Image 1 (cartoon, rainbow, N blue to C red):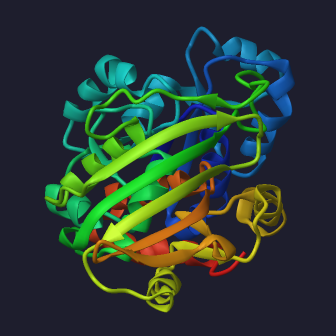
Image 2: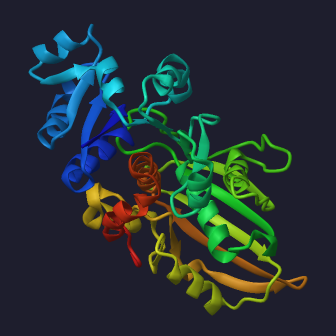
Image 3: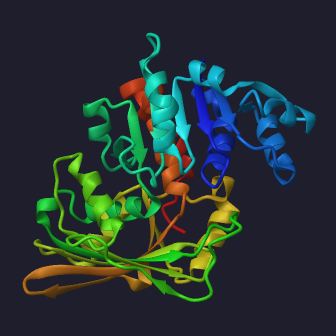
Length: 354
């Protein structure tokens, strides 16, 4: 059995622990999870994860506090780190933990360990999105991997689907309409829409830059620009896309491309709450794992200066697409090029239509 250590039990860590624990026998893994602080209001969450088969890990100083609350602690963090074949850091301190723990652990013994961090941890390692730059994952054989953000998954998936060869892409413009905070979070809600600034001269916001960094791992340099604003909702991010391509393409051509990509879901719904509700009712762990959900009523294709222009709106399934990429990176760390055979299990969680 291989060992996976998940650090953090927040909006990404919690469902990741639960999902991998449920499938641990099929994936041939043991699941350890590190929680730093014992909280009485999170007692039920921790117990639920333990009952599903995950093994609680914490520091020596915090262990008595967890045990006093009634939790079973399997081992301390350093022991779990030594056992781990893959570490998935789901905290906003991934780069800090890399310097404190992961670089040293990577060099210890004969075991090859893979370390994975999330979208906020720029520079942690190879930028990765399952179904987009798998060739880079395989060819570069990195053991530090950064799973890109949910909106980066969305933008990159739209670009790659419409233009498999990005030399056919003339220009892509994206407006990321972001939800204020996740339904599981206490803070960061806002009272009204808040516009973001354009920090990058060529890219606008980091969303286009992150997508270009992802494509650069495949030696591609698409011309992308993005803007962002935050709105007072907790449901889903929405992206308005405007993509200019050098080839002629009809609306039917574009629709066929979307249908052929298993990572893209289509919907006749126009309300984010309806899409969100579908994921809550029909998605595993309440999630939609697709890269994006394209709203068909918004889809438009036309001509401008000899270019085909594709415009529309799509919904970003929040952490769902990042969760799937985290699992894919973990399976690659465990099983090398055979990881796609293990990922077939998760095809059942992808929707064609919502």
